[in-house]
Image 1 (cartoon, rainbow, N blue to C red):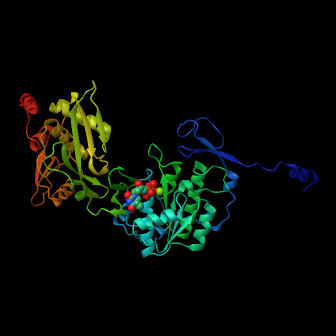
Image 2 (image 1 turned 90 degrees about the horizontal axis):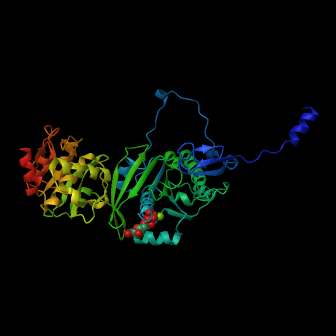
Image 3 (image 1 turned 120 degrees about the vertical axis):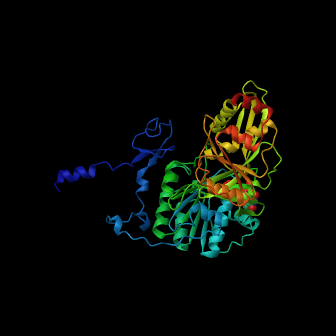
Length: 480
Ligand code: TYD
Ligand code: MG
């Protein structure tokens, strides 16, 4: 090298640390700071992240393997057995157990029962498959021991690590080679090589990336728990949800003992599958027959209550829709919806007012789905409408009856998918009548002891299930 050039090179300033900016809302990377994220248009969400720190990793599992491209038809897949979790409900939600090497995020409100569920899974897997490492960044080992005692778990094969430093976690997993790793929670884990604060977007993104690298290279599944924001999203970047293989949300009414585990993303199974648990004084237990549990306390003679048969993931479920109507003391009547889409309630109320003639303009309407369930299927419209009609008229619906059907704006009852399975579930639990849409009911053969009441309009449905009150009689006269 000529002398002048060498001198030039040695005098060049050493490259500065590169920085980039990551949006805390959507995870978008950009080299320049701007007030507004160019991807999600949120303001003041870009945070600084140092890139040089990310590039210093040289561990074997952190370096992406270099493979040649293969033709899809040539690729053979070894069927790796899934890890049984010991809970039939969790297995159902995950599509048959935990897939080796997968990263599963369990998220939910504080205190809903994430740590309780993870400890139960850790203990069950340890009993069947071998050692499990439970990394806790939130609670001390003593606190976890107290929880385990409360849940009646011996804790054999479950190794607790109180740590928040990712390096410490990786050292332990590499040394111990567990069959399953639980990290409670991902927001508490940080990588010391990043300057960003723990729980910041860059920390969560980077720690998830490194844990995923380890899980994939070792074929060991990792269960992460994650906090949610006020809005119900996983705290931290949305990109974390894209990175993991499955996202499970734990939800439920904190004052009821039912807990639902819902899969909103699953690379190895169907989504929208729901597992049902009961939180008792001794931990979480699977609810084997949720339909039975949800309608167990229902009284047949109470007005404003209707049983609906919904499809959750791959199974039909019965639950109770309750409505309470009350004369409004304000000029504008109030509508309250728990477990049902608010706008759907507005539509059902509008159809009841205009097409049936129910005087809802002066009534507050409160709708509640028993058991903390969320019922977003249009097939539950009819049950909601009948519950409101039953409450307005102070008349209970027929005993042992379920209602299934979507309501159109002209008051017609529309076809619903999988009607036969819904009817069968109602019959299994001893119901005797099912109000169903006329369209599509011809092909359904009702089980023994079950009578179908096919209806074409909401008015017919009310007549079939509640009878005719004075209110309806007046408008019926207009119709006929
Ligand atoms: P936890 O698993 O700590 O919730 P998260 O990790 O989602 O914040 O659950 C805490 C709640 O569960 C707390 O309110 C007490 C209740 N609980 C029971 O009712 N029974 C039990 O056996 C346990 C362990 C907890
Ligand atoms: Mg917890």
